[in-house]
Image 1 (cartoon, protein in one colour):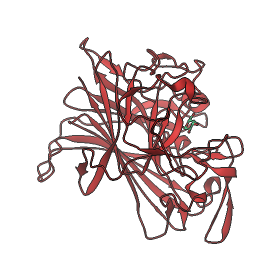
Image 2: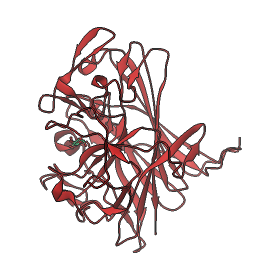
Image 3: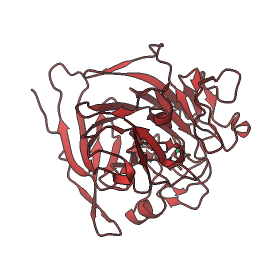
Length: 368
Ligand code: GLA
């Protein structure tokens, strides 16, 4: 192995939680000057800085510059979300003939793991910085491995679970997120990252002129509480259709509340697959910001992606880029389908002892 040390990644202080726990963050920098800052609170992506025309950098994810705001008012900015991202109807489910009652935090439902999900926990953190290894043509990589032990019955979920989330910044301008989990009892699992992107710069404008493509012919229609009704419907000839690049704002007025929907990513198209070690990820979505020409490519192993157009942002949260108003950021949350525990026809989201859950998602930034 030919390992080269280019920078030493040392933790920096991000202050303390209200309970007095130390929060650390790490700065990952690649050879083009792209920087990802990740914190051990919620295994959160705080900032993603990309070089800009002015010879400076632009932060393209919404966030805050202090812990207090993350704890008080963050709508999952940059967080790792679990144990089950998205919604579980009525906060309960049955598994192997046992009924489980979960913490309910979203109308009648459980959202994003409950009241104190993975996004609000302190994770163990280990940075790494490695060079080009033989046979691995991905250039230099640096990152942080976060680990969290979720207790049996935490937020109502069965099984003690060990979870690892690894952020890696490559010299191909990719932020790769690899997830792994094991459990000692059967349990549902659905891990994702909840970054809000704005390719023009966090806080600078809304994202309605961003042009979005989602490689999905179908989506999962939902009821009034955003629970899937169980069918897959074609997006063709509807305001949900992003099969070809379309401005997010072009038809948003026709979608009640704005976009907050799960798309079933096409599995049959070999849309530019990438091979990362022994994992194959497919191109799920791409977004272009017309003024800067900046593009975001999203690759994932997951069957679904929640496209959320920042509908609940209302300007009250003022972050490191200014006030985050309605539609000032969009999320592309790679995931299993919402409420899978109640939908046997959806891809399985149950993890059993002895098996390992794995998820890989890559956000790659292309400049012009
Ligand atoms: C997800 C949900 C949304 C909303 C946001 C956070 O995208 O689907 O309804 O809860 O998270 O505000």
